Image (cartoon, rainbow, N blue to C red):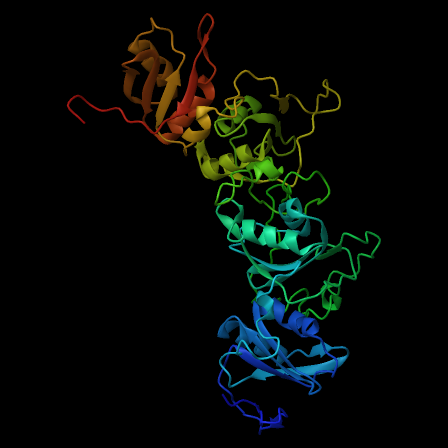
Length: 500
């Protein structure tokens, strides 16, 4: 196929006239390169725009071909570098579309990116929650020693270069993590071997980290990535996709109902501060590799828009305890419609977030999100009048539902509904007594004892909100001496006589 250069029999390239208005192609022609430019330097210019599937260096010509994975990526690259200089070793280089549609497998070092390497190019798509270097390290470090990580954004996708000390570690990580989700249902990993021979890091900060040299300066956040071997910087800051029209950066953080950025980075203590937003964790990857097994996931939720005249730590504990064991609850002293809820495990926080956000309690829809706090602190002085019982520790509560890891509650988690499952009822209790008990919190539309066990029953309330109210006040209620009933939301139905 003919291109900007024809190759005679003697192997010497003869320049053809430049083609103006060349139609877009995923193969790009690069010119004005310094003679000794390496493939790695060229690749790092292109990586922020997508996967580089091939590179062909024209030795001693100052030119090269770069093949992107698709045309859209190539178009984004050319458009960006038409307004911003691409710099290699202080020289401006130029990208234009080639009239090649593919780099042949026999052309120089094209397709070298498919060869196994100890450096991985990781793309994280479906970014519902920010992914930081610390998160990536926690995910990948089980496969081997990580030397360096560099992150950069491409629109709504986060990309990272992760350098292991051995090729085998990178191979295993790619094999096991390709296609997995960092958090349940989102933050999907796409992994390929990088073309690079080494990842160059000049600064240790939120976007680049050299774990072999902890004494590197933090640098300027807007300039650090620009110096990492030529990764381009946009006119608006950290990425070529910055600015008003850019897709949200994975480093941006949603606003917290109590001010500041949200966080709680995957159970890693305070090392990340508030860098990470409301990431979910603990429910497992797509193939069952649970994040809880890696000690990951935020375990503190922030709940707002509560009816402050009726809500108490016990009410919050009981409702949120349906989805995981709650360790502590703290209602804000200066904002009593807002509370922090700490779970014993990240999975509980995720379950509650997934099921309780927007649920009505005392006439108001709850707003549930992940908190930047790693834990809920108890008052230093238990007699502190300022706290006034707003903070409570439930670590010793007998009402925890998930003490047993194999608890049936784990497999029966559902969004609040109008049907309640009641257990531990006295054998001599009547249906009128049960109806009367639950009728304090709304209309009882249906009731039925279990035929095989009268200690259990189904109670259908008039609405989901009424069922929620009944649950928060009656779970653990002492109905007889030595008998405390337990209440859960149920998928079951009460069939009328004659119904299947």
